[in-house]
Length: 266
Image (cartoon, rainbow, N blue to C red):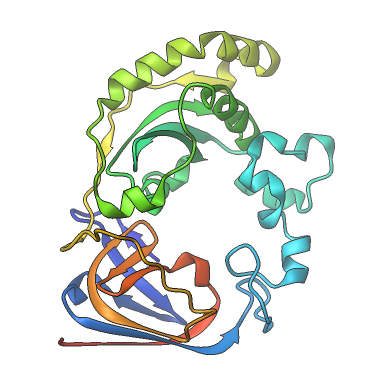
């Protein structure tokens, strides 16, 4: 879902070339109807099944954006000359990345391209996030993240995130603590990749607020593969989820699905 980092976060639902503003629909009945057609978001061919949130199988097997190193950046093999698409790798991976701490369902570490701050934080439903390090490439960011994972989680508990019961954290203090814990790992990486390849930052954190009227007590998920029509009162939007009074829908999971969207008074 396209977003704007306003206060609260402003969401739009992309349906074809149309961008439907969602914040103003809170409290209204919405209906999403899946017509049974899935199109690859890269080549536009129809596919019976979506892979990696929007791709057909041939593109999933061919594109660098679908390689396993996207999920596990420490496995990047660009430097070995085996990247599926070297030009794509140069533009997306061999650029400055940010290693950050976020509070989405508790403390977690994550990485993103510098140009994707704060969009990545919003995608994860973080209520607050703070940069910790700036590094020269996605591969190096992945190695730093591996060092951090011994001390802090790298995953969001999406169910807790959607219930809104997120504890308050002092992220600047957590940043100082974690940098101390991984100091030896960072020194080793700098010896291998250069002193300027990993730079600590003192940037301020950012708080994020989401358009949610009602937090669900229990999490029930909607699945367009099993139920072609999803309907309910839109009670909130957080991360990539629509929160309806009938359940939650992960919009990103169904990227490439051709749907009809309707909204109106209850």
